[in-house]
Image 1 (cartoon, rainbow, N blue to C red):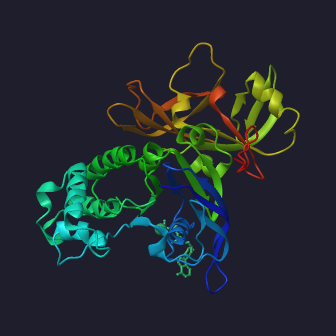
Image 2 (tube, rainbow, N blue to C red; image 1 turned 180 degrees about the vertical axis):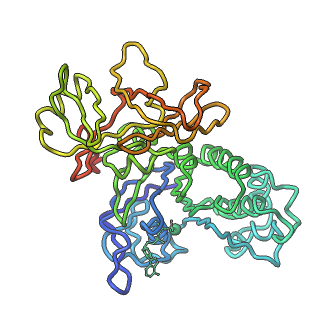
Image 3 (cartoon, rainbow, N blue to C red; image 1 turned 90 degrees about the vertical axis):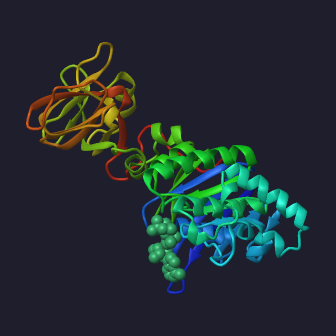
Length: 374
Ligand SMILES: Nc1ncnc2c1ncn2[C@@H]1O[C@H](COP(=O)(O)OP(=O)(O)OP(=O)(O)O)[C@@H](O)[C@H]1O
Ligand SMILES: [Mg+2]
């Protein structure tokens, strides 16, 4: 197993298009790193540069203590699992898993032991004599992961490995992957579109946008302290609610006032941090759906929002209320059973202590700045 260090790595494709810019990351031995970001932001390109499938245009890639920019993929000793996993259709599951060891002339009894161990771990022992065509999607997926772990590589690179599976199997495989990571203690770099996968599997998440790292942090940190508007809106589902406005002196306290009449009191700390620093500047207030309450609560600084419910999505254990206001629509996640129905006039309460504030122009968090100096 190994550390992987990317230093100021960029990828410029033939026509001068920058797919990845100045990407620096120190991945620790045994760490589970997840790349997330919108389609086209450079996740696969970065992974492929680490794997050696794509040339690095600028910067340095270190695996262990070797500079690997020019190492052949085979020399890097990494295993990759892609979205469309490559299994040899004419070979049995056993031979597929044994393949990488057979070509390296590893003794047969040793191969048998390792296939057995991996098959046990992935619960595919009963499938070893089948061919890939006789397997379900999830079984194929496990065989692909099995083939990858056979080699005991220095790190695993996985590009949306679960994206072809149905919801139930995905959850199952997610849990298995977490267990596998625990068991092997392997370094993992994992690309996904799935928020739940990112939040549950990652030691640290790398959020990317247009080829650049926005923030690298643990799931909890990313959720509670997003460095900018993009990260705040990208992490969390339903997404954080945003409203633009200004910080002003109200009758009793410093308040956040939106263009269309929302007036929310700031907490003491928020007021101290934003007034008069943000006087006259546009500010974006962000509030997560679970921080909008259906009723007033004691000992909280609350801001009232009036509007009309456009939808109430009951999910069994919680309800998502959509409140249409003069300042746009807000989603609130409430635990209580409410008798609320679409069309009702309603007031909801913003728990101001949980509110986030961003600069309207730079879109940076006004209270917290992530920096990549680890
Ligand atoms: N071979 C190529 N030649 C030119 N441009 C490319 C090539 N491969 C990818 N790109 C471009 O590089 C950018 C990053 O692509 P990449 O595949 O890394 O995105 P991604 O984050 O993996 O997206 P997705 O989530 O859709 O898989 C995109 O704008 C893409 O069009
Ligand atoms: Mg991709």
